[in-house]
Image 1 (cartoon, rainbow, N blue to C red):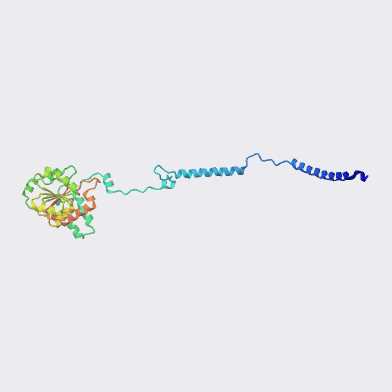
Image 2: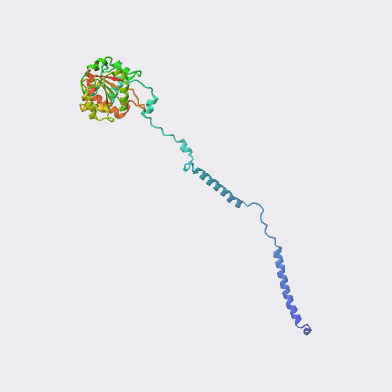
Amino acid sequence: MGDDLGDEWWAHEGNSGASEAEAEEEKEVKKEVKKPQAKRPTGKITKKTQPEKRKSVTEETVKAKKKKTEPTACGAPQKRRSEDEDSKPKRKRKKTITDVLASSEPRAGAPADLQALVMQHFSDKLSVIEQEELMLPDSCFLSSNDLTHTVSSYLKQVCPKWSKIHKQHAAKSSVVLLVVCGSALRAIELIKQMTAFKGDAKALKLFAKHIKIEEQVKLLQKGVTHIGVGTPGRIGTLIENEGLSLQALKYVVLDWNWRDQKLRRMVDVPEVKLDLLKLLQSRILTACKGEKIKIGLF
């Protein structure tokens, strides 16, 4: 019997073993295929949405910073004022002489004003006795301008006998009337405005602008001069150098009330004020005490 089956039986036996193994492998593969796959979540993942929010916040912050430093039309970055800067008090500008004078009403000068100016300036420079020597009695002063006069009308009031006085004057290098003002332009203006008063009397400009002191000395020595109009600095220099004599001087008129474009009077300009006080101290006040000279405030 064994011989009848022959080799085919052995072959069949071997194939049957292999088929069983293959069948088992197929079953395992089918099991794996039948395993349910993990379902993907359909809802939104919060972890993914959070970075998106942060990203949007960052973009808004960058845009806000760009707006703060956005260039203006001139090319400079425009900065926003913080609340601290707005709350800081603004620094007040110091008031100038022009601001003070502009807010105050013009007031006519008086002899007391000149006396106070002299005492204030020399209070720490002279002794008490020397200060008393500079004080003038009321008899040394002419009537002051009440802001209603022109130069000619004021001079006619304080010098009613001018026509007779100027005709009697014959001394050279001297004047009868001395008008002291703050600038060369003002001196020229005053000479033009006093035409109605001076008549045929000769007036000489006594200031430093464009005129050498030697030329003024020659003009004073050359002929008779009745009126001198100029600045205190040049007048004082002429007196010191003996180019101008006070021998025939009777009236000294200070251009006290006039104001320049900055609303400053002659005594409000430091340089002019010092020159004026020096001129008064040198010889004018001493001559006033001797009743040879009288002072008027125009």
